[in-house]
Image: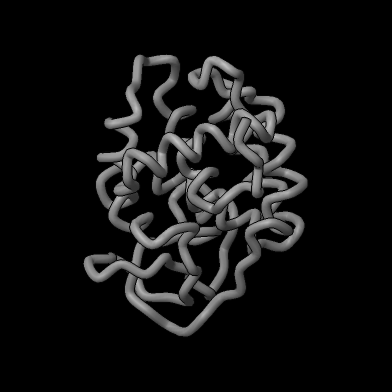
Length: 171
C-alpha cells in the first residue's frame, strides 16, 4: 500500500469536478483533459482522496459528507492563501457570480488569467492550470470561487459559501 503524504491542492479540484459530474459516468482521461492535469496526477489524486476518506474504495464514489467536513473545517488551514497584487483574471471568492449577489464589496478578487474579464487582487489558484480549467467550465469556476471564499473570507462570507457548497455537493 502506498504511503499517504497528505492532500495536494489539486485534489480538491479533482474531487469537486467528480461531484459536478452528478453521477454521470466519467473516466480519468476526461478529468485529465478538463482540468489540464496529467493522467498520472489524476490517478494519484484519486488515490490520495481514497486514503483520506473523501472517496470510497471503488475510486468512483465521493463521500460527500466527509468532503463537506474537510472543506468546512480544514481547507483554509491546509491550503491557506493571502490576496496579492492587482491582476487581470477570473472573478473568485465573494466576487464570483454566486456570492456577489449577497455580498457587496469594493474589493474584487481574481485568479490570474491572461484572458480574464475582471481586474482585482490576486488569489493564487489551487494549481497552476486551474484558470484554464475554469475558463472552459463556468460551473467549476463558480465552485472554485466558493472554495476561495472559504480560504480568504470573513465569517459571514464563509457561512454563505459553505451553504452554497453544501447545496452543490449534496444535490
